[in-house]
Image (cartoon, rainbow, N blue to C red):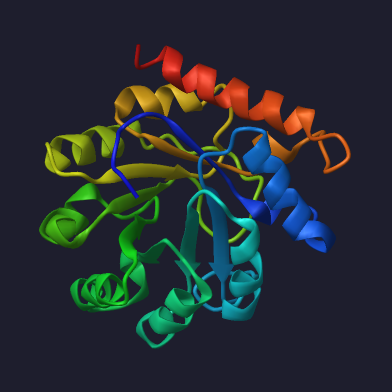
Length: 229
């Protein structure tokens, strides 16, 4: 993975057709998705249950771009190697998920993946200040994690602070939650470059009508880029 700060759209397959994941992944990539975002939930750290390592491994052959795996689980460390073996390119853990995030990020990188750290809405930017040199991505949650389709929570001040803290380091700022053409310019202007969008991408489309996915991706991207040009 080469690094750049251009706007990247990462559709969350949590909003895809669960009976047709392979075709859905191929469709969104063909329609312009830059990354594929996979939300892993354990029913413990968050009130929902989604994908384990076998499911992620099954998705891998269909993902030709970047497989961005977001762990909303605790504990994290016992599962790092399993998600590496499943083929994750980026593995993101929540800072709130354990007492030793520094060690977790070290382990993610040691397993050959890019390391991400996620912040819930109630967690300040300062919490990751001393982790940045071990981090390839900071994920700012703009909803409380656990479910798709929630209303956007304005975290632009946090994003601006992170952008300042990151400086010239090659670290992505990812936004997860409530991203659509109305909210994308707010977060992009504040310094975000990776936008996770679930319902905003998949709404109205299907593998039989994939052009809608393309139009939705283009709408989010254009709105974000309009705020950075």
